[in-house]
Each structure stands twice: as structure tokens, then as C-alpha cells.
Image 1 (tube, one colour):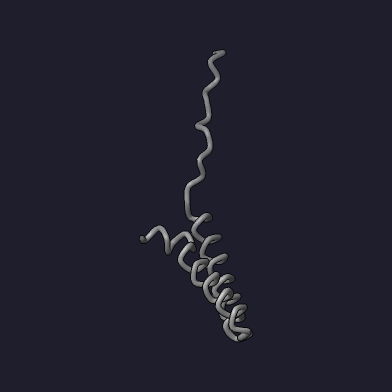
Image 2 (cartoon, one colour):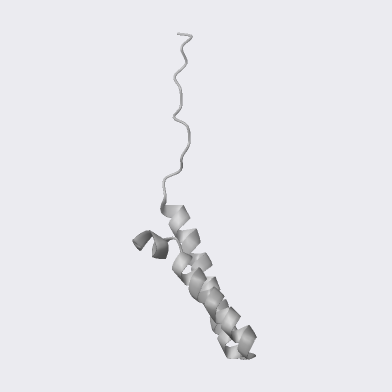
Length: 65
């Protein structure tokens, strides 16, 4: 559950629900709230991917010596 919040998935789910509810009801305020949560989700996602270590291949030593 912690990874779900750290990856931004929870905020994307809230954004999707808000936007869908706002579009179905015709309420622009709820759509705006959904857009806000979408921006928060993108920011959290970007921050979490920046903190994760990269998965580069380890450098190989030259065997010619």
C-alpha cells in the first residue's frame, strides 16, 4: 500500500474519479479538483522515480591486460 502512494497511483485514482464524477454531473469544480490531483500525482511520480536507483549494467573491467 505504501508503494501505491509513493508511486502516485493513489492520487491518479482520485483524479480519475473526480474527473469522471465532474464530467457526469456537469460540475466544473469537481473536474478542476481532479485536475489538481492529477498534477499532484505527476509530481509524486516524478519525485519517486528520481529517488530510485538506476538499473544500469555494472561496468566490466577490461580483460586485455
